[in-house]
Amino acid sequence: MSHAPDLPMPHAGDILGGRYILRERIGAGGMGRVFRARDEVLARDVAIKIFHLDGGDDPAPIRRLAEARALAALDHPSLVTLYDARLGASDHVYLVMELIEGPSLRRRIEDGPIPVAEVAGFVRDLAGALATVHEAGIVHRDVKPSNVLLRPVRGREVPFEAVLADFGVAHLIDATRLTTPGTVIGTAAYLAPEQVRGEPPRAESDVYALGLLAIEALTRLSPFGAGTLQESVLARLARQPEVPADLGYEWR
Image (cartoon, rainbow, N blue to C red; front, side):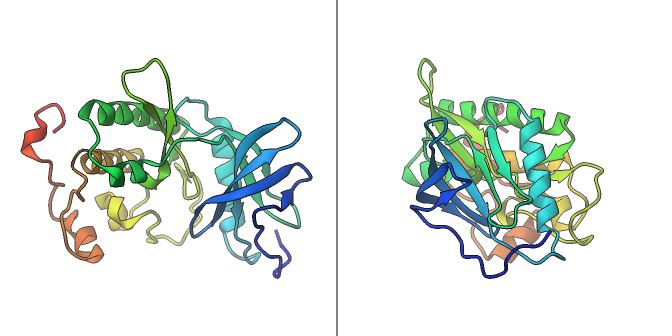
């Protein structure tokens, strides 16, 4: 798949696909940008993930297709719903997804302590989402607070439900690897030991990352303590993450 190399990244006010009006940028990462947009055909707000363009020899087009198919095949209230995709066009490549109005878990952690019952609800939501993902033969590979969005809800003990987003580095279990063997994909602070060693990802890697996420949501601290990023990554090869004793047996 090839694209025009000088095609600029869209900005707020631009229209994609003749129907999606970009309103504001709400996220950005190494693979692209995320915008709030208005679907003029169905008269609803959506989130659009627009990918950076790349050369034809790069595996990213295959990875984008894997992301779209993975999202389309999954159905769970704690997984972002995919509405539309444009992957093979000669212009912009993007996914159109459900817009989650609440903040990310990263922002929620930064704003202040989170009640234990609220964290328990988040973990329950995400565990259910990951069970659906793993049953479909997919490993998310990047479970972290910034990839968890909080959807406001009514009629529950907690004000939000957690929604897992961003399958940009998802890996199909037993599928052909899209990266060079030994390459580490994922956010370093949440990698499982086998990922640090460059081994193929597996469902347990996501469960490990969910555990680290839970500790951070409860304590607002990195489970492996202070130190450089390299020290943090290497530490998980030598010891288990630190779970504060005052959290109690059930959390441990």
